[in-house]
Length: 270
Image (tube, rainbow, N blue to C red; front, side):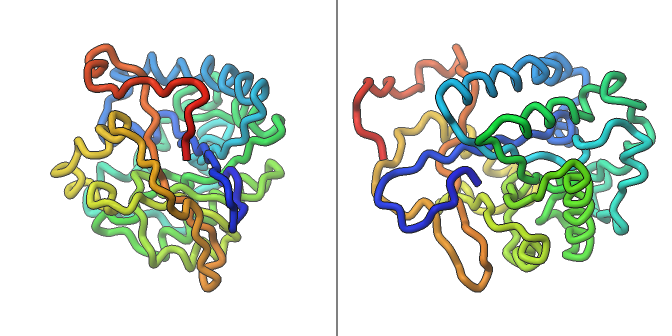
Protein backbone atom coordinates (compact mmCIF):
# COMPACT_ATOMS: atom_id res chain seq x y z
CA UNK A 1 0.00 0.00 0.00
CA UNK A 2 1.92 2.98 -1.25
CA UNK A 3 5.46 2.26 -0.03
CA UNK A 4 5.75 -1.16 1.58
CA UNK A 5 9.37 -0.77 2.66
CA UNK A 6 10.16 -1.62 6.27
CA UNK A 7 13.05 -0.61 8.49
CA UNK A 8 12.94 2.95 7.18
CA UNK A 9 14.87 5.66 8.97
CA UNK A 10 12.96 8.51 7.34
CA UNK A 11 9.29 9.36 7.26
CA UNK A 12 6.96 8.03 4.59
CA UNK A 13 3.70 9.60 3.44
CA UNK A 14 1.38 6.82 2.32
CA UNK A 15 -1.78 7.79 0.46
CA UNK A 16 -4.67 5.36 0.17
CA UNK A 17 -7.91 6.35 -1.53
CA UNK A 18 -11.19 4.51 -1.01
CA UNK A 19 -12.64 4.23 -4.53
CA UNK A 20 -16.23 3.12 -4.12
CA UNK A 21 -18.79 5.48 -5.77
CA UNK A 22 -22.30 4.82 -4.44
CA UNK A 23 -21.36 1.41 -3.02
CA UNK A 24 -19.69 3.19 -0.11
CA UNK A 25 -22.60 5.57 0.48
CA UNK A 26 -25.72 3.47 0.00
CA UNK A 27 -26.07 2.43 3.65
CA UNK A 28 -26.45 6.01 4.93
CA UNK A 29 -27.25 8.29 1.98
CA UNK A 30 -29.83 8.20 -0.81
CA UNK A 31 -28.66 8.17 -4.40
CA UNK A 32 -30.27 11.53 -5.11
CA UNK A 33 -28.60 13.11 -2.07
CA UNK A 34 -25.09 12.40 -3.35
CA UNK A 35 -25.63 12.12 -7.11
CA UNK A 36 -23.89 15.41 -7.92
CA UNK A 37 -20.82 14.60 -5.85
CA UNK A 38 -20.56 11.10 -7.30
CA UNK A 39 -20.80 12.39 -10.86
CA UNK A 40 -18.00 14.77 -9.93
CA UNK A 41 -15.74 11.74 -9.48
CA UNK A 42 -15.60 11.58 -13.28
CA UNK A 43 -13.79 14.92 -13.28
CA UNK A 44 -11.89 14.41 -10.03
CA UNK A 45 -10.08 11.16 -10.89
CA UNK A 46 -8.31 12.48 -14.02
CA UNK A 47 -7.36 15.66 -12.14
CA UNK A 48 -6.00 13.71 -9.17
CA UNK A 49 -3.97 11.58 -11.54
CA UNK A 50 -2.62 14.71 -13.23
CA UNK A 51 -1.48 16.13 -9.88
CA UNK A 52 0.00 12.81 -8.79
CA UNK A 53 1.96 12.55 -12.04
CA UNK A 54 3.22 16.13 -11.84
CA UNK A 55 4.53 15.60 -8.30
CA UNK A 56 5.55 11.93 -8.69
CA UNK A 57 3.10 10.85 -6.00
CA UNK A 58 2.40 7.13 -5.60
CA UNK A 59 -0.92 6.03 -4.17
CA UNK A 60 -3.13 3.01 -3.61
CA UNK A 61 -6.73 3.06 -4.87
CA UNK A 62 -8.70 0.66 -2.67
CA UNK A 63 -11.44 -0.26 -5.12
CA UNK A 64 -14.83 -1.88 -4.57
CA UNK A 65 -14.84 -4.86 -6.93
CA UNK A 66 -18.22 -3.95 -8.43
CA UNK A 67 -16.57 -0.96 -10.14
CA UNK A 68 -14.54 -3.23 -12.44
CA UNK A 69 -17.62 -4.46 -14.26
CA UNK A 70 -19.01 -2.88 -17.41
CA UNK A 71 -22.66 -3.30 -16.45
CA UNK A 72 -25.31 -5.37 -14.72
CA UNK A 73 -24.91 -8.47 -16.93
CA UNK A 74 -21.18 -8.71 -16.30
CA UNK A 75 -21.67 -8.23 -12.58
CA UNK A 76 -24.34 -10.90 -12.35
CA UNK A 77 -21.96 -13.32 -14.08
CA UNK A 78 -19.23 -12.53 -11.57
CA UNK A 79 -21.14 -12.79 -8.31
CA UNK A 80 -19.47 -14.64 -5.42
CA UNK A 81 -20.40 -18.25 -4.77
CA UNK A 82 -21.63 -17.23 -1.32
CA UNK A 83 -23.34 -13.96 -0.47
CA UNK A 84 -23.31 -12.15 2.91
CA UNK A 85 -26.18 -12.79 5.31
CA UNK A 86 -26.20 -9.65 7.43
CA UNK A 87 -28.90 -9.50 10.06
CA UNK A 88 -29.56 -5.95 8.83
CA UNK A 89 -30.53 -6.74 5.25
CA UNK A 90 -30.29 -3.08 4.30
CA UNK A 91 -26.50 -3.47 4.38
CA UNK A 92 -26.55 -6.09 1.62
CA UNK A 93 -25.77 -4.47 -1.77
CA UNK A 94 -26.44 -7.68 -3.69
CA UNK A 95 -30.16 -7.06 -3.19
CA UNK A 96 -29.86 -4.12 -5.60
CA UNK A 97 -27.93 -5.73 -8.45
CA UNK A 98 -31.04 -6.40 -10.53
CA UNK A 99 -31.88 -2.68 -10.67
CA UNK A 100 -28.47 -1.57 -11.98
CA UNK A 101 -27.86 -0.17 -15.45
CA UNK A 102 -26.66 -2.16 -18.45
CA UNK A 103 -23.41 -0.24 -18.84
CA UNK A 104 -21.07 2.29 -17.26
CA UNK A 105 -22.55 4.99 -19.49
CA UNK A 106 -26.06 4.13 -18.31
CA UNK A 107 -25.04 3.80 -14.66
CA UNK A 108 -21.91 5.86 -13.89
CA UNK A 109 -22.63 5.81 -10.15
CA UNK A 110 -22.12 2.05 -9.80
CA UNK A 111 -19.59 1.09 -12.50
CA UNK A 112 -16.23 2.62 -13.38
CA UNK A 113 -13.99 0.43 -15.60
CA UNK A 114 -12.95 3.42 -17.71
CA UNK A 115 -11.72 5.30 -14.64
CA UNK A 116 -9.87 2.24 -13.36
CA UNK A 117 -8.18 1.93 -16.74
CA UNK A 118 -6.84 5.47 -16.36
CA UNK A 119 -5.53 4.67 -12.88
CA UNK A 120 -3.92 1.41 -13.98
CA UNK A 121 -2.15 3.04 -16.92
CA UNK A 122 -0.38 5.67 -14.79
CA UNK A 123 2.93 4.56 -13.24
CA UNK A 124 3.06 4.67 -9.46
CA UNK A 125 -0.66 4.03 -8.98
CA UNK A 126 -1.68 0.75 -7.36
CA UNK A 127 -5.18 -0.65 -7.57
CA UNK A 128 -5.96 -2.42 -4.31
CA UNK A 129 -9.20 -3.84 -3.01
CA UNK A 130 -11.99 -2.51 -0.84
CA UNK A 131 -13.55 -6.00 -1.14
CA UNK A 132 -15.98 -6.99 -3.87
CA UNK A 133 -19.11 -5.49 -2.34
CA UNK A 134 -17.88 -3.09 0.36
CA UNK A 135 -18.12 -6.07 2.71
CA UNK A 136 -18.77 -5.33 6.39
CA UNK A 137 -16.45 -7.51 8.44
CA UNK A 138 -17.97 -6.82 11.88
CA UNK A 139 -21.69 -6.67 11.20
CA UNK A 140 -23.93 -9.34 12.80
CA UNK A 141 -24.41 -12.16 10.31
CA UNK A 142 -21.08 -11.81 8.49
CA UNK A 143 -18.95 -14.94 8.27
CA UNK A 144 -15.40 -15.72 7.28
CA UNK A 145 -16.69 -18.01 4.50
CA UNK A 146 -18.75 -15.21 2.93
CA UNK A 147 -15.79 -12.85 3.24
CA UNK A 148 -13.55 -15.36 1.47
CA UNK A 149 -16.05 -15.72 -1.38
CA UNK A 150 -16.43 -11.95 -1.64
CA UNK A 151 -12.67 -11.32 -1.77
CA UNK A 152 -12.13 -14.15 -4.24
CA UNK A 153 -14.72 -12.62 -6.59
CA UNK A 154 -12.92 -9.26 -6.37
CA UNK A 155 -9.59 -10.93 -7.16
CA UNK A 156 -11.05 -12.71 -10.19
CA UNK A 157 -12.53 -9.63 -11.83
CA UNK A 158 -9.32 -7.68 -11.21
CA UNK A 159 -7.21 -10.51 -12.62
CA UNK A 160 -9.25 -10.49 -15.84
CA UNK A 161 -8.02 -6.93 -16.31
CA UNK A 162 -4.40 -7.83 -15.57
CA UNK A 163 -4.43 -6.59 -11.98
CA UNK A 164 -3.19 -8.65 -9.03
CA UNK A 165 -4.68 -7.36 -5.79
CA UNK A 166 -2.01 -6.93 -3.13
CA UNK A 167 -3.47 -4.30 -0.77
CA UNK A 168 -6.70 -4.19 1.22
CA UNK A 169 -8.64 -1.48 3.02
CA UNK A 170 -11.38 -2.86 5.28
CA UNK A 171 -14.67 -1.06 4.50
CA UNK A 172 -15.70 1.33 7.27
CA UNK A 173 -12.37 0.35 8.87
CA UNK A 174 -14.13 -2.72 10.29
CA UNK A 175 -10.87 -4.56 10.86
CA UNK A 176 -11.41 -8.21 11.75
CA UNK A 177 -8.21 -10.00 12.73
CA UNK A 178 -9.70 -13.41 11.94
CA UNK A 179 -9.89 -12.39 8.30
CA UNK A 180 -6.15 -11.87 7.93
CA UNK A 181 -5.75 -15.58 7.21
CA UNK A 182 -8.09 -15.17 4.22
CA UNK A 183 -6.13 -12.14 3.07
CA UNK A 184 -2.97 -14.24 3.16
CA UNK A 185 -4.68 -16.94 1.06
CA UNK A 186 -5.62 -14.31 -1.52
CA UNK A 187 -2.12 -12.89 -1.80
CA UNK A 188 -2.79 -9.66 0.12
CA UNK A 189 0.55 -8.33 1.36
CA UNK A 190 -0.55 -5.03 2.95
CA UNK A 191 -3.64 -3.70 4.69
CA UNK A 192 -4.65 -0.44 6.27
CA UNK A 193 -4.97 -0.77 10.03
CA UNK A 194 -6.68 1.55 12.48
CA UNK A 195 -4.94 4.08 14.67
CA UNK A 196 -4.02 3.12 18.22
CA UNK A 197 -6.81 5.08 19.89
CA UNK A 198 -10.22 4.28 21.37
CA UNK A 199 -11.71 6.58 18.72
CA UNK A 200 -10.55 4.21 15.96
CA UNK A 201 -11.32 0.87 17.56
CA UNK A 202 -13.08 -1.37 15.00
CA UNK A 203 -16.86 -1.12 15.41
CA UNK A 204 -19.94 -2.22 13.53
CA UNK A 205 -22.60 0.23 12.39
CA UNK A 206 -24.56 0.20 15.63
CA UNK A 207 -21.48 0.81 17.75
CA UNK A 208 -20.22 3.54 15.39
CA UNK A 209 -23.41 5.52 15.99
CA UNK A 210 -22.23 6.17 19.53
CA UNK A 211 -18.83 7.47 18.38
CA UNK A 212 -19.72 9.06 15.05
CA UNK A 213 -17.90 12.34 15.60
CA UNK A 214 -14.53 10.90 16.52
CA UNK A 215 -13.03 10.23 13.12
CA UNK A 216 -14.68 13.34 11.66
CA UNK A 217 -12.69 15.45 14.11
CA UNK A 218 -9.46 13.71 13.14
CA UNK A 219 -8.74 16.16 10.35
CA UNK A 220 -9.05 19.05 12.81
CA UNK A 221 -6.54 17.75 15.32
CA UNK A 222 -2.93 18.84 15.47
CA UNK A 223 -0.90 16.09 13.74
CA UNK A 224 0.85 13.67 16.06
CA UNK A 225 4.56 14.19 15.37
CA UNK A 226 5.80 11.67 17.94
CA UNK A 227 8.04 9.07 16.30
CA UNK A 228 6.40 5.70 15.91
CA UNK A 229 6.43 2.75 13.54
CA UNK A 230 4.17 3.58 10.63
CA UNK A 231 4.58 0.11 9.14
CA UNK A 232 4.71 -3.06 11.17
CA UNK A 233 5.22 -6.54 9.79
CA UNK A 234 4.08 -9.78 11.38
CA UNK A 235 5.97 -12.68 9.74
CA UNK A 236 3.20 -15.11 10.66
CA UNK A 237 0.67 -13.04 8.72
CA UNK A 238 3.07 -12.03 5.95
CA UNK A 239 1.28 -8.74 5.53
CA UNK A 240 2.38 -5.21 6.26
CA UNK A 241 0.04 -3.23 8.47
CA UNK A 242 -0.07 0.40 7.34
CA UNK A 243 -1.63 2.25 10.24
CA UNK A 244 -4.07 4.95 9.19
CA UNK A 245 -2.94 8.30 10.57
CA UNK A 246 -4.96 11.16 9.08
CA UNK A 247 -8.36 11.44 7.44
CA UNK A 248 -8.31 13.87 4.51
CA UNK A 249 -11.57 15.79 4.18
CA UNK A 250 -12.77 18.62 1.94
CA UNK A 251 -12.25 22.12 3.34
CA UNK A 252 -15.40 23.39 5.03
CA UNK A 253 -16.30 27.01 5.70
CA UNK A 254 -18.50 25.87 8.57
CA UNK A 255 -15.58 24.09 10.26
CA UNK A 256 -12.92 26.64 9.34
CA UNK A 257 -12.71 28.16 12.87
CA UNK A 258 -11.69 24.73 14.18
CA UNK A 259 -8.91 24.18 11.64
CA UNK A 260 -5.36 24.31 13.00
CA UNK A 261 -3.04 26.94 11.52
CA UNK A 262 -1.51 25.97 8.21
CA UNK A 263 1.95 24.45 8.44
CA UNK A 264 4.54 26.88 7.12
CA UNK A 265 6.57 25.87 4.10
CA UNK A 266 9.82 24.20 5.06
CA UNK A 267 8.71 23.16 8.55
CA UNK A 268 9.56 19.62 9.57
CA UNK A 269 6.88 16.92 9.51
CA UNK A 270 7.36 13.33 10.63
